[in-house]
Amino acid sequence: MLKKLNLIFDKKILESAIKNNINAAIEEDLKNNDKTSDILPTKIEGVAKIKAKQNAILCGSPWVDYCFLQLDKKIQIIWHFDEGSSIKKGEIICTITGSYNQILKGERIALNFLQTLSGTATTTNLTTLKIKKFKTKLFDTRKTIPGLRVAQKYAVQIGGAFNQRFGLYDQVLIKENHIKSVGSILAIIKIAKEKYSLDGIQIEVESLREFKEALDLGATNILLDNFTTKKLTKAVLINKNKAILEASGNIDINNIIEYAKTKVDRISMGVLTKNIAAIDFSMIIEIK
View (tube, rainbow, N blue to C red):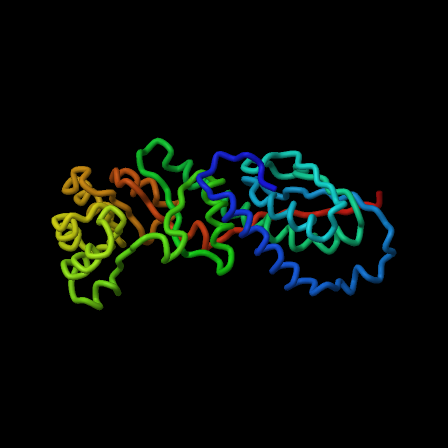
């Protein structure tokens, strides 16, 4: 199902997500019945072409493949561009041949995934290009469309950025509301250290005072929330490479260069996956 891509991704998790996403989408859209396609002759063969209507990074072809595979195993798809390719407006990205009716059934499902994931990959790619000359790396967040976390984090990697925290289950992230529950950074770190190594814990701070406190307590991964670039620069100087520093909050493609100039290790941006500018694709089907 998946072509060889230079991704840091568990193949089983990805394939499971693709199956779950497509099966849920088919159930949502068809429920084993397409009333419109059912009025058409059943033996017509078709040839469909998906066309890009704007420049983009192509992402989502495994979802398209699995969609049509589920509807009709006889449908054949020829991709004219590899996953992750830069495509231009007007280019035909793939050709689909098979049952006219079955292609129609999968049209909207396939395009929904293709336009959403290509949108995430394209936005990510444009943002990473902005900071390519800096040491700062771009990361995603958990601010994803419900049910599409793996898919969108895959798209972030296709776009050239990095993943972190697939869920609450895989990394400790201590935030403001966690700290409030026990009263202080000192108290929460003491409790966390009883269960986990500090190397596996990230703690969020909202001021230079809190940052210094977390650093003095041995924190090795610190999230600097809504810091100005001036405060970030100070934090980087104070840090002296002791901890991994991540900036987050009110950062977008328009101001990311200013944040990267602070030499912070990471920048995380929720807009990569929550503010999606879907890529416009169209599918034209002809009788074979």
